[in-house]
Each structure stands twice: as structure tokens, then as C-alpha cells.
Figure 1: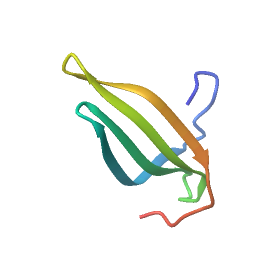
Figure 2: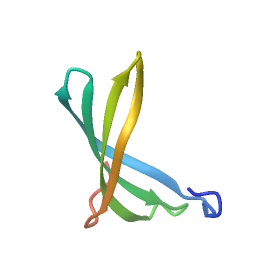
Figure 3: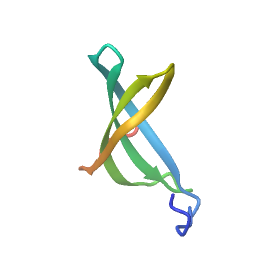
Figure 4: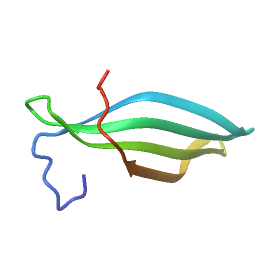
Length: 75
């Protein structure tokens, strides 16, 4: 959440992780996410991906994207 946003008691649910090696020290992480409220109702479904690079022994996030998608079953 951004500093000016209130959490409204939401939690982030993430699932179906898939990690693909793009190069020796570069990986693409893909997964699905949704916001879940106190009544366990999900909203704001998204497909997400990020590119991670191992630099000087530390993983760094170089790129991240979230794309809204149709609702999916939470597992």
C-alpha cells in the first residue's frame, strides 16, 4: 500500500508461482494476486511478473508489472 492509502484490513493473496531462468543470474517470476478482505472476499485480481537479477551476491528487483485479469479461484 502507498503511504496515503489505508489498508482497510485487506491482505494480499498470491499463488501459482512460476520462475523461469532467463540468463545465468536473471530470473522471471510470474504469479497471480488478489486483495482479500475480512470477509474473505477477493477483488483486484492481477497477473504479476518481475525480473530479478543477482548482483554482487544480492537479488535485486529490476522490473515489475501487474496486469488486471478476470477473477480466479484462490488456492
